[in-house]
Length: 68
Image (cartoon, rainbow, N blue to C red; front, side):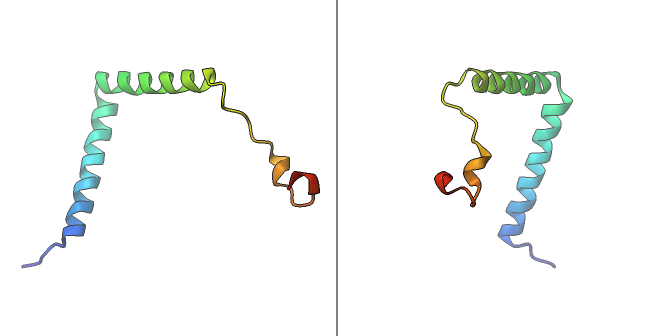
């Protein structure tokens, strides 16, 4: 009889739970509405955030002494 380690059991259980959750979210109307609500809430929060600013990529230029 082959023994399964506890780590392997946890890994298989986590993968199974993730697949079931993904199928429930995508496969049911409530799940799809929930995903849409999360997406709209997140994009609305980002659009209204005053502390989110773009990061200028020229600050990463090693040849620019005033940028470093």
